[in-house]
Amino acid sequence: MRIYHSYDEVPQAPRVVVLGHFDGLHLGHQALIEEGRTLADRLNLPLMVATFYPQFQSLVTPEFKYIMDQDSKMRHLEEMHVDEVFSVPFSWSIAEMTPEDFVQSLLLTALHAQGIVVGFDYTFGHRAGGKAEDLMALAAPVPVKIVPAYTLNDVILSSTMIRQALREGRIADAERFLGYSYELCGEVIHGLANGRRFLVPTANVSLPKDLLLPAPGVYAGRCVLESEKTRTYDAVINIGTRPTVDDNPFEMVEAHLLNFNRDIYGEMLCVRDLYLMRGIVKFDSFEKLKEAIMKDIDTAKEYFHQKA
Ligand SMILES: Cc1cc2nc3c(=O)[nH]c(=O)nc-3n(C[C@H](O)[C@H](O)[C@H](O)COP(=O)(O)O)c2cc1C
Ligand SMILES: Nc1ncnc2c1ncn2[C@@H]1O[C@H](COP(=O)(O)OP(=O)(O)O)[C@@H](O)[C@H]1O
Image (cartoon, rainbow, N blue to C red; front, side):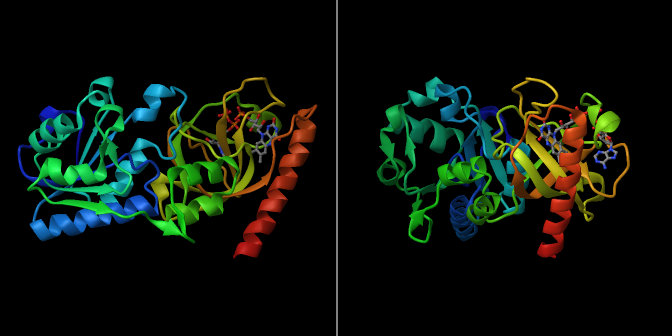
């Protein structure tokens, strides 16, 4: 899969273009991209996903958080047999384009779209004035496919539902909407070394600042190291602040892997299969926190045992 971050990099060749933000790549997004694949195969053209990162919401709300980091998004798109991704930052100049200009200059001229696929609620151009149905006339004779809403129990699936489930720690619900196992992946970085000295060692996972984290709390979960992909380690994971240690409001993801003792600084670690066990507590000593962590380990073991 080829990834282009500017118009100059895009080869001047016809293609089918699927448009959207696709944050989270949930079941609705997947259905849309599958329609793109079908159209591309029918027209015998490569399939491009054209997307904006940072997306529009980041311009208006700088603290906007994404369900999925960009590397994971690209990995998932590749698994979905997408041939090309065009990903550029959304800008005010794009926001101000007329719908006609958006289609002519961007879709038809810069991206050479010879087939276009969008979702039922897709909007484009100045003040989102262009609607999905307008594409038919503006892009004619290029075929345009508008994919209907994806519903679960008569409810239209949306990124908002997934955000809400994650924020409330309902990871299993989020996974039902996503259609794949939710995970947080990043490099293991150094912390304050309090874990090893006073508690249990915890691998601190470095994540992009604009990534949405699930509800703060202590979770049972499973860890996978990129270097040994087929193996998983049961773990207890703290997501959020550490009020016992300091007042730093910065939220972190730290995992203590069970039956594991190895230096993994610099390695890529994913945490997945998250299950919320309790909220984060401000203890008055490391001893009390350690007691709580030991209980968390027992609760997690019990949870994994029940699940097996
Ligand atoms: C299972 C688990 C539960 C935790 N629970 C809490 C908690 O309730 N309150 C808190 O302040 N910190 C909690 N922590 C975070 C620890 O304070 C933190 O991991 C420790 O200070 C080590 O930090 P370090 O990696 O910087 O050395 C928890 C960590 C783990 C692994
Ligand atoms: N069971 C384990 N779970 C997590 N990390 C472990 C484990 N055993 C050894 N380690 C190593 O110890 C480091 C964490 O030690 P700790 O004192 O908590 O961290 P830091 O100094 O990074 O704050 C991890 O990054 C990893 O390299």
